[in-house]
Image 1: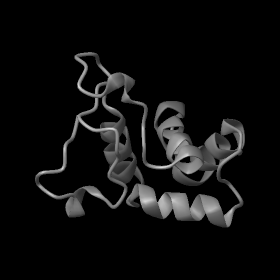
Image 2: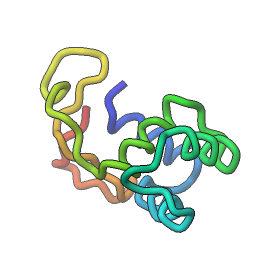
Image 3: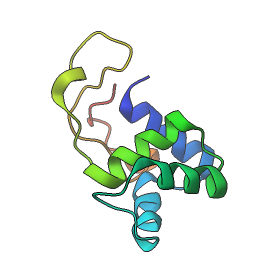
Length: 100
């Protein structure tokens, strides 16, 4: 599953865009430098997310919407078409935005 697909599934499961969840995390004091554990616990308790989906959000909360180019354009399971992630929701994603 691509990184973007994880975020799209998080939106489907929670009814909130990744950007909305990042804003909630910031309200709780989570951001760059925050360890994964507290964020994962919060996402599980309040949003019912499992570790994999929570870890996708941990990355966005702590590092922003850019991912390493390691999987961009690769043929592996976790490939993405871009090093940038769309955080504003599936419904608003431009048709030409590259997805995994």
